[in-house]
Image 1 (tube, rainbow over the protein chains, first blue to last red):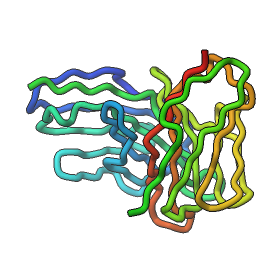
Image 2: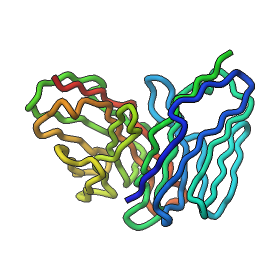
Image 3: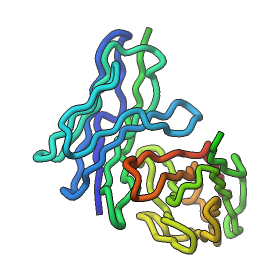
Length: 115
Length: 115
C-alpha cells in the first residue's frame, strides 16, 4: 500500500518568515495530494490540494508543488502569521476504483509561528 | 447546514469492554471513513465504506468493526477494548467517486481512553 513520509515533524518560524513542509510518497499510482490543517483540539480541515496533472497550485499565502518523477510534494506558506500555528498533514490517494477517497496521511508537522 | 457529528466526544472504559463510537453525517455522502490519530503516526485508516452494506478494512483494522445500514451512519465498534486502542478517533465522509473532489469532511473527534 501507499506510504507517506512527512518532514520536519516540528517547525518553528518567526512571524513573516516562510515555512516549507515536505512529503514523499511511495505509490506511483497516487494522483491526488491534499494538505490538511488541524488547530489544537479541532478537526482537520482541507487547506489546499493538487492533482497529478498540475505541478503547482497557489491560494493566497499557501502553495503546493508536486514532483511526480521524484514522488514528492511540498507545502509553502509565505508571510506566516501566528494563526498559521497548527499541525499540518499531507496525504496521498488514488482517484478512482477502490482507492477513491482513501487517504494515506503523513505523520504531521507541528508549525509554531512566533510573533 | 450539513454536518458530521460524533458521539461520545470523550469516553473512558476498561480493558475488555465493548465500545461503540457513533458517526452521523447529513452531507448525504456515500463514502465514510474512520481514522485514529496518535502522536507520531498521523491519521491511520481503520475502516471505510463506499455505500450501504459496503465495508472495507483499512491499515489498522484489527480489533475494530463497522457496519453501514444506511447512508448517514457508520458506527465503529471495539469488540474488546485494549489499552493500545487509547486514541483520538475521527470519522470522515466524502462525496461519491464520480465527483471531482476528494475532500474529506471530518467530525469533531472522539477521545477514547482504555484503562
